[in-house]
Image 1 (cartoon, rainbow, N blue to C red):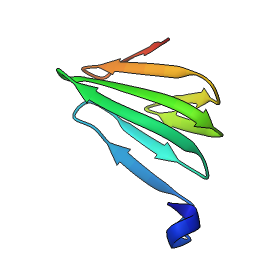
Image 2 (image 1 turned 180 degrees about the horizontal axis):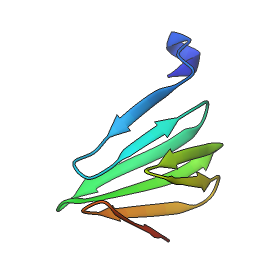
Image 3 (image 1 turned 180 degrees about the vertical axis):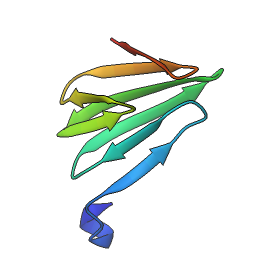
Length: 67
């Protein structure tokens, strides 16, 4: 998004959590009320946790679980 629009900070809201993203590459998967964030490059703040590059975190009804 940053390269295309110049936006450097944005949020992704799923049914059970919010991720704040700054200059990174990541994937969000939502299935059966569960959100999974996979960080490919940089860092993503999911809820109150910061997820570093190469890591995953899952949220089930707002409860975060490192993977």
